[in-house]
Length: 119
Image 1 (tube, one colour):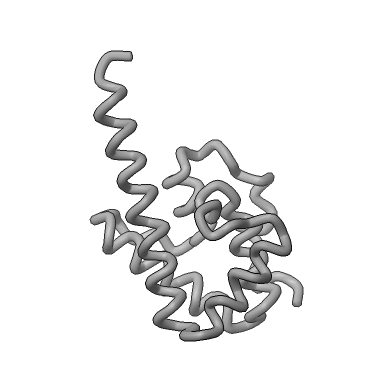
Image 2 (cartoon, helix red, strand yellow; image 1 turned 45 degrees about the vertical axis):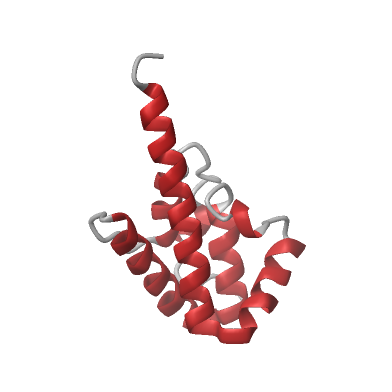
C-alpha cells in the first residue's frame, strides 16, 4: 500500500487522457462517422470508455470496418496517444492500449498480431 495511491491516481489520469485523445483523434479522422464507429463498438460490447479495457475488440472492429485503411487510423491514434502522454512511440495500437490498461487484458493477442484483419 505504500505509495500506491499516487501511482493509482497517475494511472487513472493517464487512462482518462488516453481515452480523451482516442476520441479526439477519431473525431478528427472520421468526423461525423465517429458515431457510426461507436455504434459498431457498442454492438460488440465495447463502450466508449472501455476501449482500454477491450483493446483487441476495439482494433478488430477498426479492421472490420475500415479494412486496408485501418492501419492508418491505428497509427494515427497510437501516435497521438503517445504524444499526449509523453511516451515513446508504439506502432501497435492494441499493445499500446493494453500497456495503458495495465497489461491485464491481452485477449490472447491474436487480433493485435493480425495484419489487416478480415472484413
